[in-house]
Image (cartoon, rainbow, N blue to C red):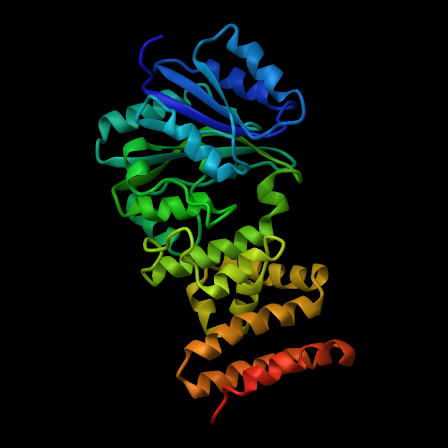
Amino acid sequence: MLRPEISVVIPVKNGEATIRDCLNSILCQKGVEFEVIIIDDHSRDNTINVIESFQKNNNRIHLIHATEYGITPNLNLGISRAKADLIARMDADDIMKPDRLFAQFERFVKHPELVCTCTRAEFMGSKSGLAGKSLTHNQIKDKLRKHNCLIHPAACFRKSVFTSIGGYRNIFPYAQDYDLWLRMSDRGKMEMTDNIGIFYRVSESQVSSKKAVLQSTISFIISWRYRCGTLEKIKSNGLTHFERTSNSFSRLMSIAVLKTILSAHLHSHIAPENQIAMIRAYKSFFQHVSQLIVIKRFLLAYEYRFLRSSNNHFKLIAFARLVHYAFRLPVRRWLFHVKRLLSCALFVHC
């Protein structure tokens, strides 16, 4: 086998039903030398046996058994083992169009300034139609300030740039690609071409469907951090107490969403489609999480803000919000938090 020009990186977990079609579609690619790196995240079905059956007949396929759990560390592991400088992302439940790899390789050859190129996608499964549209670098930069406009499994990017900006970061679960695109867009040109590179499977079992509320919440934190100029500076433990609270409870959905809904002035900075997602998340939050938990999380977040803020007007407004939400609870539940409310009140001096 010649040295690969593109490394296709695929994370998989319990993908027995789809991995065979995925690999067959990749092995049909022509015009470019490639390798396929598959990172298995502790699958419990027959996924590994299916992959090993392909390995017997094709030395371009490499299977890595993950030592950690989750897509973010496993993607970093797979990319670190890649021999090529061009990384083509692919998901185990999608199907690659026959000319995708060659078309993306050609783009990098013709445009050395490119750091990432992405194709459009055609939906399959429970949804039909097309995803994405042709975008220039400036259009991508503008859209990324508001929401994620690139299709992760249809993207191809330079490993050298990926490594130089620290790769995927685990502090943003389920939106690690959005965080990556924003940091990568500051290092070189990005594009989305008009051609269709993959069939993108949509089903209720996939992460983007099951974690849609959480994904929307974290995406908001990422976009807000980027607009404030602090996204690049975040380290593994660098989120604020408020943001850590948002992510900690059951991989929490929505303290950040609730903050957004309450702070109406922020809505002018959020794309219309994201506003709708935020409102849905807000409704979903109250359907699935008791109001008691909502108050508890607000108290923790605002207590921290009380201690750090010297603005008495802000303290009073924050405390008023807490009381407003607390009185929506049954009395016996509200009394449970009286002590904490009073401790907050001690910091209000106006």
